[in-house]
Length: 243
Image (cartoon, rainbow, N blue to C red):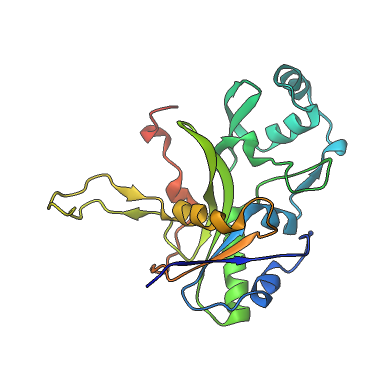
């Protein structure tokens, strides 16, 4: 069976309140077992998670950080509002832990692919967003499928960015091979594959950043339906060697 990655092109700019599930179903011939990868950006726009930066009042802390790191005070204040913990600040880059537990640049606040002077925030609850979309799409299409919400993250020891999952519904985000044997009969002890991240990264090959393709369908990947959330992919503090 050949794995397929099918782009879903949107000509319309997504706005707050748009029926995203209707758009996906109308533009796709869905099948049972499909995995729908949806860009965080369109989910955030649809949920109204967009900020007019001109209306943001910076705190003294935000103004100080903005001056030191060559950023807009309004942008820094918005980042701080989405931050649970500042991880590192250096070379004009602010790495923070979001309220969801993700460690990423600018707490996921992003000014790309949005009107000038605005920024988007991560969904309030990406797993809930994924579940809502999954339920709506399944109801409208009559197909059983999974939904992943993807965003672009940098990586500590690698150049470039890759797409990762920030929300999941209907699929196990991680496959744990511990206890199984490799090709030479050795028992695997710690091998766990972040399959949700791998699927999102694969989908980005057709989604791109400037192709007006915020959705992709991955077909013929075999998976068991699951009720797990993205919390499984967040490394616990006691297992993190770099905190």
